[in-house]
Image (tube, rainbow, N blue to C red; front, side, top):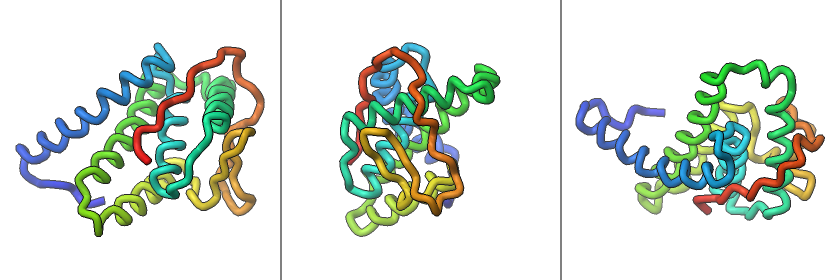
Length: 171
């Protein structure tokens, strides 16, 4: 991705614009998770990016199932070993990537919107190794087609805690 600007004042303006997008997202996430949970941020990122790029709606049932999958994934011994700093960094990566995608879509000219969607799909693949075309949402959550090299999150329930569904911010 090209740098938006080389000038310090323009970089600050872009940073401020991203923060304006991030703050309402963080407010919504805090309603879902008081701990700024990386699993919730990842669920929001996956669902929002899928809907942004594909134009297909993800049902509340599928979103809830995805959140349970990700909570189970983050409860595995491997991911429980992450430090608080690593968890915070994961949270911020998903949140800021989502915010940047939304901001770019908002400021894009009509003939550039597909480029923004393509970039969002490329970032998803770069961050997680998942191709959007291989993602499928159902009442079981997220599954990936067999051609994907990245494993789908575990489908075992992570907790009995019923959390509200993350709100999708862009469609």
